[in-house]
Amino acid sequence: MDLVAALPAFVVAVFLISASPGPAMALILRRAALHGFRGAVPTVLGLEAGLYVWALLAAAGFAALVAASEVAYLVLRVAGAAFLIVLGVRAWRAAWRQRREVGEGTEPVAASPARGWAAFGEGFVVMLANPKAAVFMIAFYPQFVPADMPLFATTAGFAALQVVLETGFYLALAAGVARAGGWFRRPRIRARLEAVSGTVLVGLGLRVAVAAR
View 1 (tube, rainbow, N blue to C red):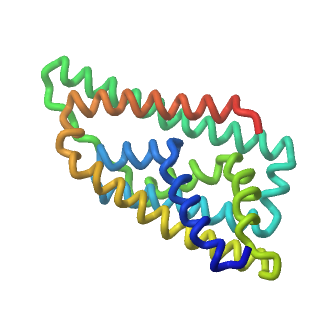
View 2: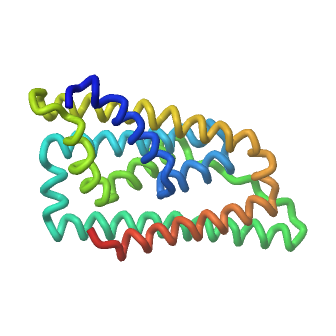
């Protein structure tokens, strides 16, 4: 398969992967619903930065070492699961505070968005601490790289294209969710959203923790 012939299949695969449910989607939807489009942008950029780092590590062969090492894979799996669970518990606590304030008849405190760098770091860590990303990158990119082209440079190019496509897709998704942000930020709705997103994040963390390779 030459490079031109590989591009359409690569683009279709990227959009199918981007639309699949997972930690990235959960983080983006929560941020966009609670903090609007601008609040979701750093999270999207952090996730995509983490994806690009994994792609370069895969091209350099480091991701294969991580995937092959039982210890490294376990450490990443536990770290990624723990981080998702912490995010989920934080969402549960926010939901509990919202419900208590509404029940007491006090004016709920508006959700304070994480600063840009904190939201960026949140997305970056979620992506980078996911050992499945290492396995995925090893299997995904080589099938699109022609045999007569340099592996590292071609993979870096494909990864950059994936980052551009996914960033556009996720920002469009965040913009759509943010349009209903006023409804999502109503105290009772916000409490329910925090509870649901917390449950999703904890569930994803547990799935990462127990998942086999």
